[in-house]
Image (cartoon, rainbow, N blue to C red; front, side, top):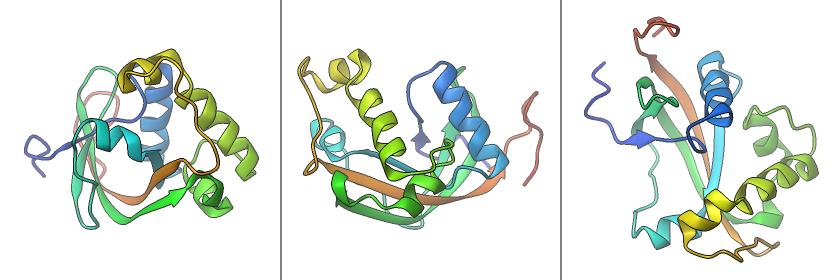
Length: 148
């Protein structure tokens, strides 16, 4: 599969968290993700669509895998359910744990800078784009191996 022609799927920012998330995708533990609708709106970027394939990039900006979206929903932060939290594959066992981790990320200096709002915060009514995906290909890159 040619990963070069696919749009990028970037999980978190380059660094330890991205590496952890990419490893979880490659192991099959992570089959869902979520992001702020506001991020799409600020970038004037269309929402992802079911069936879309994306190239997952690691912290070195290498295209290491391809995923295919199987579900895309826009929900209130308060309406994210336990199954979604579990499917994000980050070790959360409750929605409260998932939300605390995501709020910490979304309230970080990096996210606030990306959004252009140093005081940005989320609340129950913040709209979140939830996505489910399946791993369809792993690139033949040292450290990853061609698995699909």
